[in-house]
Length: 131
Image (tube, rainbow, N blue to C red; front, side):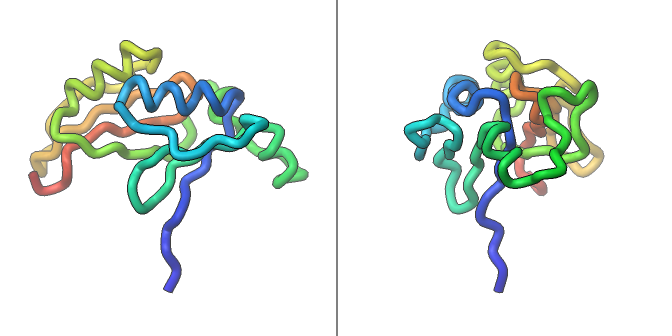
């Protein structure tokens, strides 16, 4: 069986990426390399990690589209589940995120908002589905 283990985002500054999630959402840093080119957050069973563009370039000789250099958010999002979307949304904005869509209730009852964090990553902040 294959198991989802990591989501890794290539960013300009790994330490700053981790710091945003620590400050805005109270997450804790699990690991960062001495070179500060790779770091992980303690997010449960699946790991949210960040790697430097230099490390990413070493993995992909043809390059890639950087989330921070893309004018529009990439077509991939990271969803953070919370019981209080409005508070998480406000905290994200307070720590440098850009609002893309304010909290709103979906037809199925889930509350969802969208922000773009300082690294350029598209975040969905949402209540659990079915709550």
